[in-house]
Structures are given as C-alpha cells and as structure tokens.
Length: 196
Ligand code: S3P
Image (cartoon, helix red, strand yellow):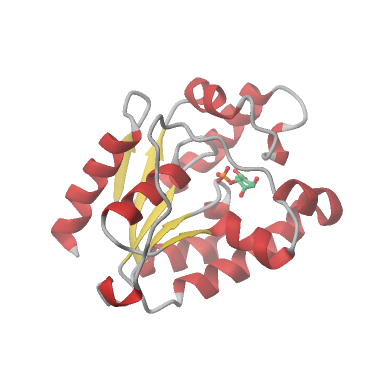
C-alpha cells in the first residue's frame, strides 16, 4: 500500500502506545479536518506520539477494512461506494470510548451526517492551506484518485471552494501555509488542552 507523502521534515517514530497511559474521556477526540496535503496525517501522528494518545487515520482504516488501497477502491467501486465506507468507518471510530487523535480524509465534511458526528464527538481543527501549497505537497503523490485526472491545481481550487464553508465551522482554524508540523501540533495542543 503506497505511503502518503509527508509535508513535514520531521522524523516521527512509531508510537509505543500503552492503553493504560491514555486519559479516558469519552467523545473528546481531537479531530483534524482539511484538504488533501494539509498535513492532517503527519500532524495527527505527531500529536498522538507527543501526548501518548492513540492515533486513528480514517483513510488507513478504510484501506485496512476494504483490503485495498484508496485508488484501487475508487477504481473498482467508484467514489460513492468509497463515501459509504468512509461514513460507516467514521461512525465506528467516533463511537470509540477512548480519547484519540483522529485524522480524516479531505472529503469527509461533504456528508452532513459525518459533520454532525464529527462536531459532537470532539474538538475539530481545520488545517487551512491555499491550493498552491496543497499542490506542492501532493504533486508527487499517486495516492489521491481525485487528482489523477485534469489539472490538479484547478481540482484542488474547486474542491476547496466547495468544502471551505464546512471546514470553516471547525472549533479551531489554523492557517498552516507557513508552519511546520511541530508548530502546528504545538498550537493545536495549546487550544485543545485548555478545553479537555
Ligand atoms: C479525499 C481525500 C483523501 C482520501 C480520498 C478522497 C478527498 O484523504 O480520503 O482520496 O475527497 O479530498 P486525504 O485528505 O488524507 O488525502
């Protein structure tokens, strides 16, 4: 399964998470939303490792349960089928009683039921970046089926226009164009830890 490109120049070691070390707060997940290439996975993993929380990436869970990569899933079953699986998996993940850092796929906010679930299950953080920055981070990545056809900058711009009204409802919006992962993670934690 191809790995996603990391927008961060930080080496993130695999979490040695022990369940007993986590804080048990139901429905206080730390949830990252935003476009492809905004750094949700890298920042989410860093936050989880730094604060000894479990890390869940919805795309990774989808790939595990479907037994195929996201591009293969799109190719074999289409985007609508992918969105159905995404919704089911998100529902299951958010029911988890153990507080976790959760990175979501960029399109998760398009579904209203997903938005309801996300916003009531935790602290939602939007990693906001402009289309040029996003393109710079995903241009060598073949794992994003929506960018495989047409002009990727136009696609990113259009998707961002459609999704921005949903993303902007996040509890916290962070402009991440000029920040590295450690800075982003630090700012998120400063806000989140005040509340939870
Ligand atoms: C998508 C984003 C991807 C993945 C799928 C669809 C989107 O996740 O869920 O390719 O619609 O923006 P990332 O945002 O993690 O790249």
